[in-house]
Image (tube, rainbow over all chains, first blue to last red; front, side, top):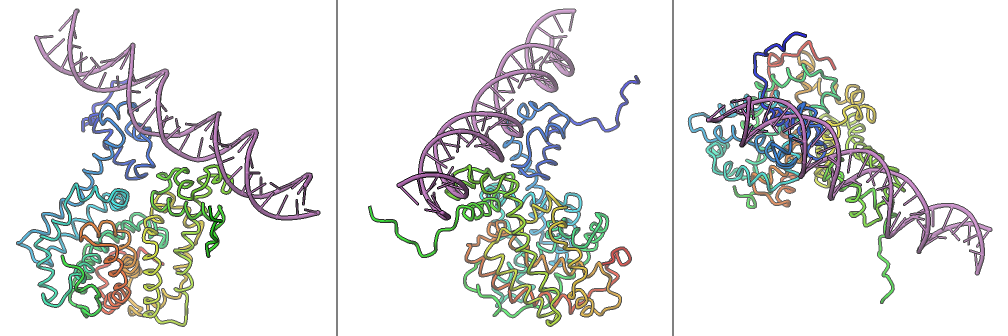
Length: 224
Length: 224
DNA sequence: ATTAAATTTAAACAAATGATTAAAAAAGGC
DNA sequence: GCCTTTTTTAATCATTTGTTTAAATTTAAT
């Protein structure tokens, strides 16, 4: 037989192979749904090596989940505190960044949302999202853009929910949308690229059509 | 001891107790994450009774999931084919109906979306969503409302994605939103009630601000 | 009341699964 | 080359978990 051909990219260490396999399988099947043997098979590696390198299934999952959350939320931090960009620019940056990320890893949102549902405290321990968002520069810009005075904080939250939803929901609902509209992966992806231009426009029109404050019941209740 | 007091609502049959417990635990922990013993405990019932009444964990899950999907999708069918309501009225009905449903069962969307991700074929077998949506009366109304001529079908889909997203996403992201904005359950619920009035307004403004067709790359590709 | 059917229970089984062990193999240092 | 350390392997363990069984109990019919 011929000698094994050298592949250009050197094969990753077993530790890395396991992590990569774990990421893939955990994202697809969830924590409870994956067996350690699935990960070992996916990595092409002996089962005992998982425990050799990562102590336990749970430790391995925590590691992956931590990295995933960082990937998902860290970029946000820098973006929303940039004092050199306008609100419109921020919305465009935000859109570009997340749509690119989610096109490359569409099941990120469900993976993270499931984890938050299972273990809500874990999130606030890892990232301190509340602090970051509340103290952010973008929040001031939001208020200014909305007229600054009689807009209740609940209205702000409603807007932010819509923005995040427009970016994230299509990926959460991808399997459903593919089913309903008979979309191929390519068609779906093309539509998501379209949204890079569309979402900022929809946001714009949301902000330029301010809604009567009387529609919000929580004027006094919620203070950010 | 005193004789057992008659409760006004007669206690449900064990079969019903099990189904109710199963619904609750499955929704909270997912299929792989629930043990049959969890369900038995939640129902306050001997473990063997699950298999006595429902044969197996999988059969029980299928039953629950079938009912859940029906609950979630059946109301849609009648609504979108009603020829006696305008598009605006439909949007308001749609909004009212789903927000009420989701306030009473907030984890319905994640539950269903997870199932679709795990088993995409199952959905199209149970409901034939594609047929129903494509042949629906509301689709004609959408087209008319958008000017009828040069709006590509992909634009329609984008709009529908936004509408569904505005209704469903806040509930999918509920644990995250509660974390970010430090919301109580009551505050969250009040905000969702507000959305009954807000979502139709946002939809309206989306339709009345038609977006340049050149933003859509899939004019030829997608035909509904 | 007697009997048959339906329901419930405690116990146990068998397969799956996360983890460990002890030995083998490979890598690295001198 | 020899020794030590690191990595890998096959086998096994201990627990969990879905399911079954056979007996006990309750319900319903005659």
